[in-house]
Amino acid sequence: MTKFAYLFERFPSFGQTFCYREVTELARQGVNSPIFAIRNPKGEPPQNWDQRIVERVHYLPGEEQLLREVRQASKKGKLTEEVIGALDEWGRRTDFLRLYQAVYVGLRLQEIGIRHVHAHFAGMAARTAFWIGKFFPITFSFTAHANDIFAPRDFEIGLDKLVDATRVIITETDYAEKFLRERFPGRGDRIHRIYNGLDLAPFARADFSSTPPLIVAVGRLIAKKGFADLIRACRLLMERRKSFRCEIIGEGPLEEDLHQQIAQLGLQGCVELPGAKPQHEIREYLAAASAFVLPSVVDPDGGMDNLPTVIMEAMAAGLPVISTAVGGIPEMVIQSETGFLVPPGDVAALAGAIERLFNEIGLPRRLGERGFQRAKELFSIEKNVRSLLALIDPDNHEAQNS
Image 1 (cartoon, one colour):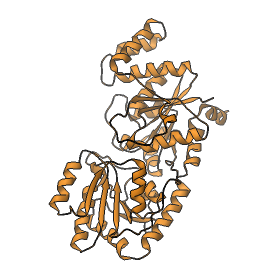
Image 2 (cartoon, rainbow, N blue to C red):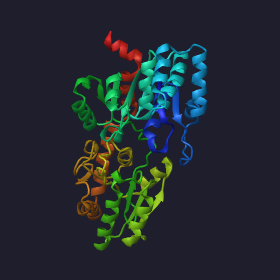
Image 3 (cartoon, rainbow, N blue to C red):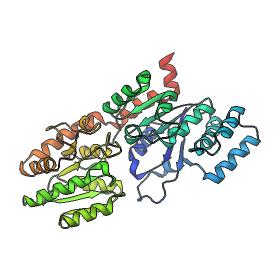
Image 4 (cartoon, one colour):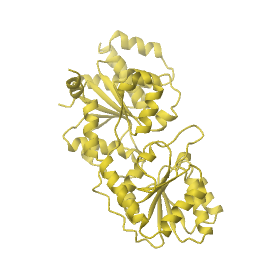
């Protein structure tokens, strides 16, 4: 019997395919944990989600119904005095809904015999899980990703309180594990690195036949992805009379700014922003590409990438990767072995790395093949999900500590 449940802020989500892949692989291994999601991902680009997974998701009600159901549970004597007191004391302070969501989910977890809940990101879902742990005999854990630990938002239940209360913290890279251990030295035994997993099978291998060469970039159109630097690098390549196409796939708040930049630099004929695409189309772009570029930077608020899933996907397609030494990226992209790392914000170096791939016959394929082998070794979803399960499943935890 499954002893843990998932709690997501939003599931399944176009921008968090790594969560979906994790749940799907667990199901393949026979672990069908209950799934709770605070928000319904309406309005996202259509995806080929497995309906058996989607049908397992229990979406929490909106605020009005949520408050009504919690009040009814209180009247029926289902809540302890401690829980009632905490709800009264917190009142309508910031983030008050997390307490009500914790009651709503916690009561249902108790009914089905669940003793542990796992959240992704040190954000809304983890803060709700924190209160579940306060109100019920249910432990919690969370997977920390990027901005949620490098540039966390200011909440009363912040990262420090989550780390103090959680049983286990999973993070995606050695870089992030070291970052958290240094920040929370007294909680180092709770922090574990498990790479995101990826099923390599659906990815067709790049054949490098595109004429002119195709540069592909994928990600949210936000500052930390560095796409403005890629566009400037494309202008340098044009000035050097290099023939190429560049597709920057994604959507986000900087879309209009990037369109304007492309127009101002006279790149309309070779740089395009085709918008967000479903996973099967992204795989087609990667298979047709000559190189994958993600020039990540640290944004003004300290936000940065940790383990961009799109780099893993590019490596699964056998592409050379050009990126920067930000977060855990150097754990994936090995300089001159699986691709090139350039300094964040260095447009000339970025253009130079791309040009080298254009100029040296056979180099992109050699780098891409080594990247594929590295992806196979590090990012096996079957192996990595088993490692996760060993840490967050209560029965495994009890067996290890008996």
